[in-house]
Structure formats: structure tokens, C-alpha cells
Image: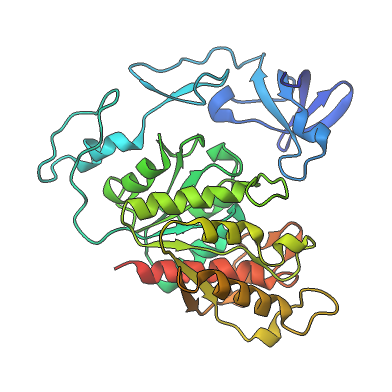
Length: 376
């Protein structure tokens, strides 16, 4: 059973709810449940906070009993997200835009919205294929997008959010800031993810529509904030990168994978080359491009106190070479760590700064530059 409790909102910004006499941090998806104000009686899901989870360790408002029971609903919708759950709601799938709307007037395209199981069969947008960068976790988004914008100012890069981390599209502060700075041209949620500016029924449908209907120059595919994990080879949210890369490859699009690297993660499985990325690269059924940062190995922090200087970068590079040789294309890219650090964009991961873990940020900076270079 869901661990639901009654509570009272005691502060709206940041949101805090009193549950059983305890004041607790909470989050509410206003797009689903409506506005939340101080004094409202709410139902909250307290499971994650009670379990002490580092990711998502806050209560989630499930329903607002004071002002959230008057939603108008939608008319003529035929696609649901979170379907068959108590939070199911209708969406307008972006896939339909490939046969109408944004594609209207294209050669051979007939006006009129798709319905039911009708497939999107509109013509491919004129021009070269849209390159896709698959990121292993949400922390790669901001540095990758920034690096792409530095390499190609004015580039239309959008974010296609899938599974593996948080599913609500409205949860990410990184996306909000990137959109505010006009570094991201759009945000769509695909598959189980929901609540972005646009919705896709499937990840391949979202990637396809990004280039064909939304006219993005490049697509970043990855999870929302946080990531699922079980400390096993295959039981983690990083496996969503396998789906993202295969979707892009099946669409015959240039496909890049940003590797998850770390100079100083306390967990050995994530130091150097993370086992998340290693598993994905080993299981991919076709070659991809894997950008790596150009840097002096001696300048990187060590894997451990007794490791030779530059051990983490050298170990990561050796691991990547071993996995990619004969399978994937390693591409060395220059990076600007100091430039990114000065932007004010997100610059911590698991409470580690760029100074603490430069390799973590170097990887998506290299990947973003490579993505810009892949745009014809």
C-alpha cells in the first residue's frame, strides 16, 4: 500500500507540510494537483522521506483536499500518461505533430490530427539528421548544453526526458534555468515521464518529433533528477541510456553517449568509469560515439590516496579504450572547466564541487562540444 498521510501546509515556498506534529519538506506537482497554499489540508506520500533516501527524500503531495478537487479535465483527449494509476491524466502527444500542426504544408503531408493508433507517417524534415546525445544522469544536462552553446552559439538544443530518474518534468530546476537562459530550446517528456512542455508517448516518438516537428538542431536524451540504483550491474536507472541510444540508432540518427566518470566518488563502482556507463557500452547493439575530455592526466585528482597521480583519469580512459576498441568511436574534445564553473549553472554532484570532482563535469562538457560538432 501507498504510505499516505494527512497533513497541513505550513509554508508554501519552500513547501513544508506538518504531518503528525512534525514539520516536513515536501514537493507538489502543481500541474497535476493544482496550487498549494499555507493552511491547505493535503494527502502526502511520506515513503521516500521515511526511508531516508538521498534522492527524492521528501514528501510528495498526492492530493489537495482544500482546493484540488475541482480540476476541469480535458475534452477530446485520447492519450493518458500515468495511465491506470490514480494520477492518470490526458496529454496531447507530440508524435501527432509529425502528421499535422507543425508539419502542415510540407510536401506530401495531409492536414488533420492523428487519432487512436494512427501512425506518424509525415515526411522527414528537409535537411540532415538530428544528432542525439544520451546522458547517463541529470547532472550531465547543464554542462553538456552549455558546452554545445559555446561551441555553436544559437544552436537549438532540446531535452527529451525519459525514465531512470524522476518522472515529473516539472521537478528539474536545471531545466528551468537552462530555459530561462535560452540554452535549451524546449523540453519534452517521453514514455513514463510526464509534465514537460510537450509530451511523447514513446522515447523513439519523442526523438523523432524533436527533429521533424519541433525543428530542434540537436537532442539531449536522459533521465530527470535523481537516479534509481541497486548497486548491481543491470538494476539501475543508468540502463535508460541503453534505450535512448538504441532509439536514436534505430532512427538512423548520429548517436553520442556521454560517459559517467568521476575523480572522487566514494563508491568504487562509480570511480573512474562508472559501471553504469560500462554496462551500457558493453550491451549496445551498434556503435556510438563516446566523447572524452582532452586534459593533462597529471592534473586530475587520484582514484585513492595510494593511487599514482592522475589515476582516476588514466583508469577511466583505459577502461573506455578497453570497452570501445573495435566497437565504439572515442572522440577527444577540448573542455573549459573554469568557464563552466563561472556560469553559475549547477556545479555540484552528490555534494561534490567541480574542484572536488572535475572529471564528472569534464565528461558532459566534452559531450556537449561533440554534440555541437555533430550538427551538420
